[in-house]
Image (cartoon, rainbow, N blue to C red; front, side):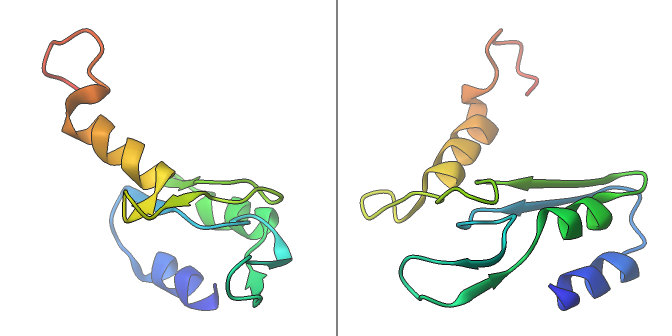
Amino acid sequence: MDEIARIFRRIKAKRVILLADCCYSGQTGGRTILSRTRANISDAFLDRLSRGKGRIIITASSASEVSKESDDLKHGYFTCYLLKGLKGAADVDGDGLH
């Protein structure tokens, strides 16, 4: 997470969006189910990182949730529906603007 913070500080863009499809994306000290390794990301860290104009962080799960994956999809459900939305499913009025 130190590296992500360092990258965010160095980016000169006016707008930055970070999308994270991972388990316990907001919990310090949480454990992932498969790897049994400690997560090192916290809600407070994400709040600090996203402060400032044009900084957005969207995570697939909260501090106490598991981000579900599917072997059939070959990635997480968050990514699946994000991609569907970007490909047009989010255009509910059909005007061609997402």
